[in-house]
Length: 245
Image (cartoon, rainbow, N blue to C red):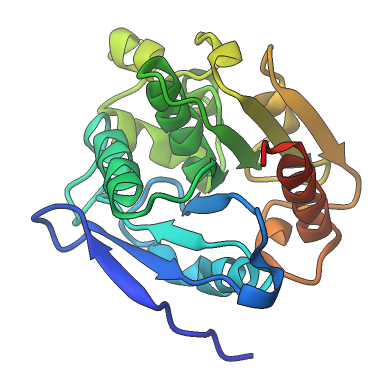
């Protein structure tokens, strides 16, 4: 199935990676649904851009959600890394907020994008703008994640500027598990029991609502006909139902 092209591109900075794509909602289903801002994953690496998740974001728009996808500088040739990558994501979210007066906002992040969504959400909450955040197979503790041996875990030191013992302060700052997650309006960590890229131990964060789904792997969240995708839609429907009119 061909991906519907975004309706607009919002440039939020001087770099070629500083843009966000906007898919307009299906008007017949939009109602009072929150605006969604998606942060894609890909081990924080330059090799993985927004395109692998465009069909996922487009589908959310078809379901009535005003849906954005943020691009940002990543480890490698695009010049990202900690903390530049997070700063890009925060700048993009602020630009979207300035561009659109639709409220409330829900951040959704997959994998490394989940890590960035959680930290960006905390930044917004501490600035007096609480948002809901949904992490899909999210990395929450780069310190323990960097010690693993799969390819994404091995990419963590490149993003962080070294191993944990050499960059203690940076890893502390980049950790979600050491933060006061309760500042967020709502935070869900949805994780597949069969995830071999990000272990379910990364979903054990105090102050979050955790849902471990059997038979779901790491990339199932992006497949629009999957059980994982339905679990996400259930959470979005819950947020919509709970939102003040």
